[in-house]
Length: 364
Image 1 (cartoon, helix red, strand yellow):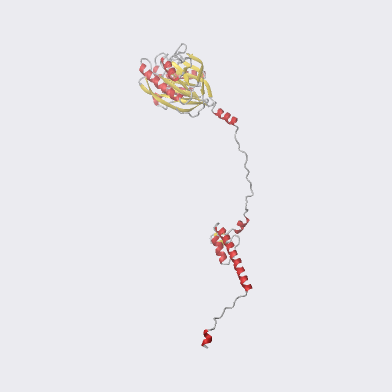
Image 2 (tube, one colour):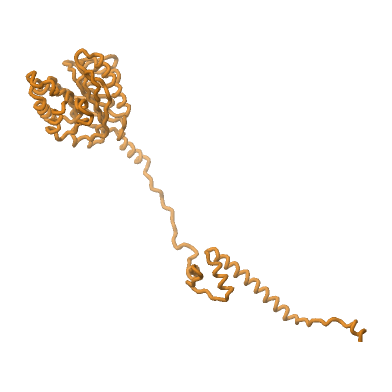
């Protein structure tokens, strides 16, 4: 018995038939491919944030349907399936719209074209109220201011400068000249009222205003200036008015003229025309110094080319001058108000200002 037990072979497992082995191997291959395909699809779906829900549902043997809620997310399988793979619209590139060079240049030149303004300018020392308070054969300052207003408006004055204006006279001028604006009015104090620039409001607009300090009759007072714009043409120009010390105050006159020359040149540097009116209390020296230092000309003629060439007589101590694109015509000395409104002639002229290149809003 032992012998037989020692030599007995171990039992052999029964082998599967060959056909069955090949069948099982094929099924395993198909299953492997299917798993790979499903895994790729799940990875693609997971990029839209639903991969976890799809895997969980598949593992649980569940079924997906459009709009099925997994947690707080909604799986929109039907929308993914119906989404078109390409846009139904076609974008075509059109032609570029641009101006021909000639038209573009014409528009640019038109924008920068020189701008002109033609108007009547006046200079008037109206004789302050304090000079005729019950003396000299003149009426009160307020009465004479009314005469001045009537003369200026009847002559068609558009822009002008006044000197020796007092508070009571300024009130009359504003009342009798409602179509005009004044600078500085009362905004620069009592001493600032002495010098006034005025203009017809329907024709011009004040773009800028300012003043510099100088000495007149041993007092420091403001010297006003404004930038005016023609409402019709857009042309702009600077306007200054001044009054220099009288009598034996030659040093003060010379110093004041220096301040005025500096102001004129600073304003001219903006590229816009500059006009100045005033009682300079000099017949020749003021004109010669200003013409030589600024290139200005007087409304009654004369220039400083090759020396000082004075305008033809009669010469007054009152002046109208301009430069930087200014031409004058029709200059006249009006004595209608002499011994009634003032002890000065009132001066008028037609002036045309031209800006080389129109530059709105220029600053000094």
